[in-house]
Image (tube, rainbow, N blue to C red; front, side, top):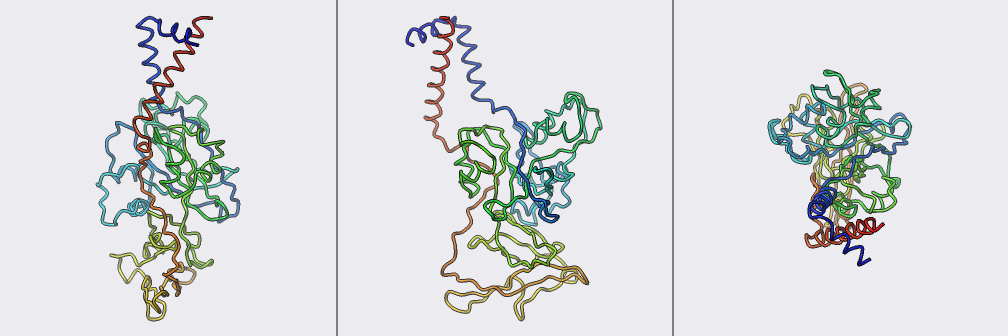
Length: 378
């Protein structure tokens, strides 16, 4: 083995330099994109569709996008929906720079055991575009060129017509996880990340991520891989007959429901929806929701440990638009563990110390040189 190493080290200087350059490039470049297929086996009429989230981070070198630009790219129906998905104040203007990454909420449809965003987003081909450039350069690797080609019956991915309208089928899911409803987040793994870091960031477990994504072990994770990250959703007292009975909200975001009259977020102290009347809307448009003499969202204490809340119970529109509410009681002295914060961006690449990465690089380089020396002897 020592002789092999010596032979490798006797390579011409130019060849050694080329080898080093190639090796550094292989380490620096993210793994090749692979088509992602998120299991989505729900078949019931109401269960086969849901609202899913995706994490969008424009590729390096892309000019900072505004919220309005991201909304246009994904054809979101309202500016408020984008603000809600990211927990941003409703006063945030469309011209504000978009946080990186940004969460985007889109409808998901299950079909044939897999899920994809329903009808949106779409993209109109421009001069010089290829499907790979659209997948990587526009949609930041959330989808692969193979996915786009298959969804749009494109036989040659290198030949698309200028002006052609393409459906971009971002993978998603509506399935419960562990018997519990969740909100699925489509997430592109950043360089240097790990399953443990992603699980910690999004308040889930390594085992859950591996199982949902059918990964053999954590070492199979690749930079650029599209992951299905299930986010735990808050429970609620919404009636099973309400229009928004399937409302799911993860921590770190809120949702506007009941024709935007009610704002529901995931409580920071319990795993229950915290719903309030949306501020700034006309009272003549939004009906008043009350529980006796208490208004929606009001809380009163009945003892040192027990509190009563006028909680949101959904809305109906069968005969007239009505917002439902009922009294719930909670024991504040035995409250459960607070939801894990779910920041919109990943800091996983900072988890490993620099000295570890350099040690790994040196050891890997020695292995490559030894292998090359062995081959040279043959």
